[in-house]
Amino acid sequence: AQSVTQLDSQVPVFEEAPVELRCNYSSSVSVYLFWYVQYPNQGLQLLLKYLSGSTLVKGINGFEAEFNKSQTSFHLRKPSVHISDTAEYFCAVTDTNAGKSTFGDGTTLTVKP
Amino acid sequence: DAGVIQSPRHEVTEMGQEVTLRCKPISGHNSLFWYRQTMMRGLELLIYFNNNVPIDDSGMPEDRFSAKMPNASFSTLKIQPSEPRDSAVYFCASSLEGPFSPLHFGNGTRLTVT
Image 1 (cartoon, each protein chain N blue to C red):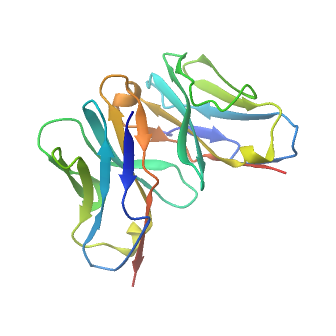
Image 2 (image 1 turned 30 degrees about the vertical axis):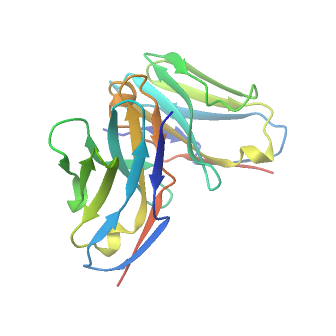
């Protein structure tokens, strides 16, 4: 069994401030890791993914995430956020054996002017 | 690319009625997923097809739910009879190579069962 925990359900920040959205996972097998963003009334869109290789992954819209195997974490970061980054962010893991995907409960990022 | 197309965007129906949700995946993607999103339970995988064959339907809540994929460009999720607790946003997603590839989501169907 695997699980994903997004440690913060809501993160309010001011525009141009840095932000970190935290994600921890547990799995008995190796996993692929993903971050998705969901804007109101839309489906989820891929921000970035970690399959293998460098543990620092860069995605769209200036986001990046770092895979930490020892801490089983995959935190999402952006050095300077914009109002348009206001959305819900989902961390997801897929086990490399059975291909079972699990999503976290989401983190609502609210960027204030 | 038009992306994953779902219809209808909104569906309001009365308890006991049959509901059919439709999905057209991205051309060339060989995997299709149906998810349900609610405030209480978050995103739940209902069923996953690979090359039009159901691979994992363990998330289908009960026999009232059924899904088909008659060809590579169309899938349906049917609820019969519908119940108020089925109210949710239903997403269809497709991917190039199963769950190991990133998922491309449609904009969802918001279902309200009264």
